[in-house]
Length: 343
Image (tube, rainbow, N blue to C red; front, side, top):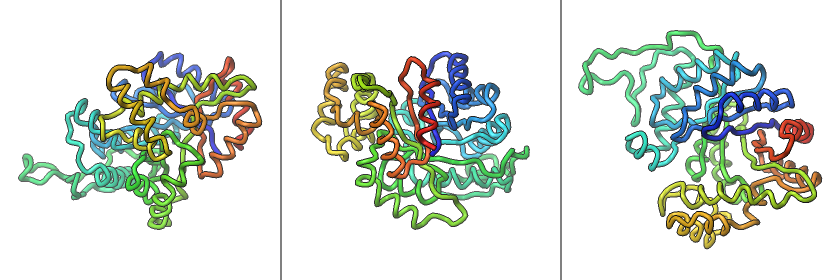
């Protein structure tokens, strides 16, 4: 099992890079860079590539609406080049509030659009001439939709690798099935080892049954906050704002993927209350409503023996890359300890 961490939105990039350098020395395998509607992730990913030498550098996530598939291929090739073959491109459909509100793009056909984008990215990285006519993308653009001067092209420069790992952030049944069928990896969120089979087991099995033999087994990157000690359970409260934000405020009523996940874990009443409170501006009350059991399920906080048990639970559920947020006075030291436990 690999070990990874996520860099969140904003913050000082130099301090973040210093921390990643320390984590790399401690054994970290992968760093993920978030984007949302904050700073773009490829800029920081390129900076991290220059500051590190072995750690994989992944986007989590680039949405498939704000960049064309060929631009995503250029980004993948460029990041892989400057990092010496260490790029991972995490892709996703995001959600209608961001796609339509921030990017001004209709949130249409997310499953088909993601699949077509990956097909085009892979072809472009192989330096194939792009002549693709799907439901979401038409390359070159037909003459009746433009000047008529567009022509099939291939990537001008030669990539570091002819294939860069493409992961999909997915939560819905159909999108998880699609990820298992054709992506290199899957990026779930609010992942519970105990609840994952109930929610996603059938989707993963259905997708795996359709998976090409040319693809390696699906990688799964998931995890949570990690704190080790006999009196650290109180640190779970640090995760309450994040849970409240995603379950309550990351989307509208009736269109919040994270709220749906909490419901499917069995916290339907709590999820509804969290959302109502959060959307009414009562964020602290929403935070207080997050069930302790849910926070325990998706994080790794407790004594050494307990944390090691949680690692094994994630491993047994299929996770191949444990994504952690270390909470410690010595986060690099905690990464070093975790690296010994995940191997």
